[in-house]
Every structure is written in structure tokens, then in C-alpha cells.
Image (cartoon, rainbow over all chains, first blue to last red; front, side, top):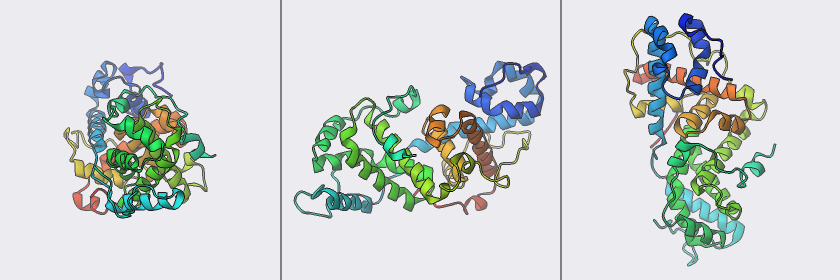
Length: 104
Length: 221
């Protein structure tokens, strides 16, 4: 699914714009707001321009959520060690210290 | 479908996803730790855990929106990693391999939680009542080019699971729609549609007063 080739961008209606917007976002090499085919339409339809601006803002800021939020609690590693020991013997604490934390 | 068997081995060569690779550069000492871990070296397991625990935990937290579940899935991801590390052949970045392993584990977890009674294609489509409103809103950009990260985290955590999954995989993690479609067993068009609806819903949520967002599910510490 991509933007239909027969779209008349010069006479685009908001309903049609709304319908093809997911594809415009998915297919566009750049920002939808900067798509030359849409400049006339967005200028004439500020509601649509505001929507595009907001959705682009959300998509841009989403990348910030990739950054790590922090470490899992210590119990996660303890549980992993415990389970691995159950399965395959003494893993993660060769000296027998079950509560050993992973080394950084 | 045996998702685990299909996804947990290193069958998939690196996809051409620049974003993902850019985010997964080689890590010093990782290759040695992997080889040692393959031989059962406990220290190496520990090193690999420390190298990747934050990324895995963050991913599970974003996908699940819940600290407790995220820790459980982090644990499961590393257990799977240690069990399957012998099948890692280095054809893709280790972090990419671990990332995909984690995504697939979370998806399996969600299916087990309740997505097993109907197809995922149906399940990732929230009900009509949940669907975002289709009005364009106000004339001015509501978000004024900026979004507070904490507000966005909360809004993402409060999304319906299907919306959240596609949003996190695409906008946060950098997967392409065709990759998401394969992972979620839906069409590419469905992935695009879900992403668009997710962003519309986030727009609505971010326009609401912060008191309403405070009722969202538990998220990051």
C-alpha cells in the first residue's frame, strides 16, 4: 500500500488527504510538511497543516524514548543466575556466591 | 505457529535498516564475551548481561508499559539468550540479534496473555470506542514543535497494546513497516494504519491536562 498514483494534489480534499496521510508518512523520504506536492493544500487547510505538524513532532520526539531509562532491579540478575543453575549447574557464581552481582 | 523456534535462531540476516544499525555499533569486548559465553563461561554471561541489560529493559518497558512485566521479560530474554547463544553465528550485530529475540519474546508473552483467542490482526485493532477521533483539532499546531519526554512516556504507556506495539517498533526502535508486519503477522498496510492511529491517539493524549495522563499505567522509574 502506497500513495495512489492518481491523486490530484492540486485539488486535494481534506477527506482524501486524511485517507492517504498514513501512506504519505510511510512513503515520504522527508517530512510530509515539506512535500512540494502538498504545499498548496496545506497552506489552504491550516487544520490539516496543524495535524501534520503535530504528528511530525510526535514522531521526532519518539526517538528520545530509545534512550535507556535505567537498569532493571538486582533481582533480575539473581533470578537469571538461579534459573540457569537449576538448568545447567553452577552458572554465574563459580565460587558459590549465589548473591553475587554481575560485574560491570 | 512456533514463533519461538522461528525467531530465536539467527535465521534472519541483517536488514537494511540504517537507524537500527546506527544504534547498534560494535561494543568493545563483546565479541570475546560472546565466544566465552558459548563455552559456558559464567563471567562472560555476566559481562553480556551488563552490556545489554539497559537496552533490553528499556525495550520491554516501552513495549509493555509496566515495570514488573518489563523486568520479567528482561529476565526471560537473557535466559533465552544464554540458552541459545550457541546458535549466534555473527551474521548480524549481536545487539540486533538480542533486540529481535526480545521483541519476539514480548510478542509471544502478549499472545499468551490474551491475544491467543483471536488473530493478532483483529487484536491489534482496538475497538471503535478506543479509536482516535478523526477531527483535525485546532488551527494551530497543538504541540508547538515540542513534547515533554515524561508526558510522551506516559502517553505511550497508556496506548492500547496494539497501537503501542507498532508505535514503539516503528517510531522508537526504527523497524520498517514490512518488518513489523512480519513480526505481528499482519499486513504492511495494517502496520501503517496502526502507526497513524497511534500517533493520532498520542496527539489527543498530549492535548489533555496532565491530571488525566497521571492515570496512565505505571512506566519508567
